[in-house]
Amino acid sequence: MTKKRILVVDDEEHVRESIRLVLEKEGYEVETRENGFSALEAYRDGAFDVVLIDIILPDIDGITLYKRLKLTDPHITAIMISGVKEIETVKEALREGAYDYLIKPLKGFELLSSIKRALERRELTLMAKAYERYLEESLAKEKRELRRLFINTISTLVKLLEARDRYHRGHSERVKNYAERLSELLELSSKEKEKISIAAVLHDVGKVAIPDAILFKPGPLTEEEYETIKEHPVTGEEILRGVIDDEDILLGIRHHHERWDGLGFPDGLKGEEIPFIARVIATADTIDALRSPRAYKRSFNVQETIEALEGDRGKKLDPSLVDIAVKLLKGER
Image (cartoon, rainbow, N blue to C red; front, side, top):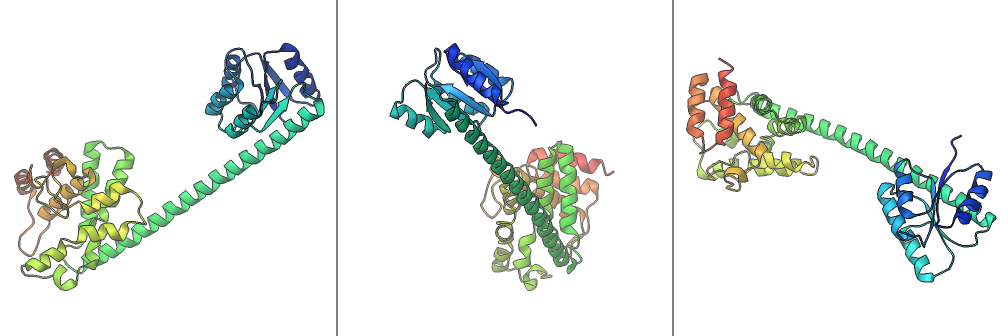
């Protein structure tokens, strides 16, 4: 069994040595220091299970030392010792979190009893913290799994919605693919890539609330119908909020129809006011719209798509992302 380590900090040598003898006799590993700064150095070499600190030290006072040691070890268990019992000092020490306050001359049984109880409290505190971490990790894992299942369910719902119209079948998956390829060329972090991928595949989830008669209308939309269509980014954000707690993903979905020139919706954001993820999705969405056939147009080839993107540069799309999109498309030739 590993010996419990005790640090004794007192400027009086006879006090340090008498405490050492009592504690070592009980099987504790003891180190002693005569001032605060040497105690701080000792703690840098390894934590102690209990620290006994004299209130009055030659360099820094005991309570200040205790506060500094807490920065190194938040769960430090300290017993303050002093030659006088000053009520305000006792209160301050206990208020700062010290376990006990002993008055010199120390009695052996009193010291050992306080040490034993302090160690028991430390063990309980560490066990509670370990269990708390376990619960947090378990809940985080469970939350990630629930989020994954929810995203998969919503993605399937979007795919089923798109499958009902031959012109939009597979649209969200293709936008996700283009967004991921743009992310690769942008050399983003794996975390940023994951956020973009999730936001891209779910960007049109708000369309589940649009009546089929409007969503799949073959002819031109009325002004009122177009206003209904324009609600889907906000609806999508509202559907996902509460399940997805990542604001970057949610804002990417809300703002994927904003325009670089500020003429988009729902909030008329302009330029770099538009969240980066939303700008990436808008670029990927535009590429797919150009490359896919629609009821009113054929699919564009690579050169036609590049020319159309150039026409949207600084108007609909972020100019820097148009550069990346052109690079991506030239790689398809």
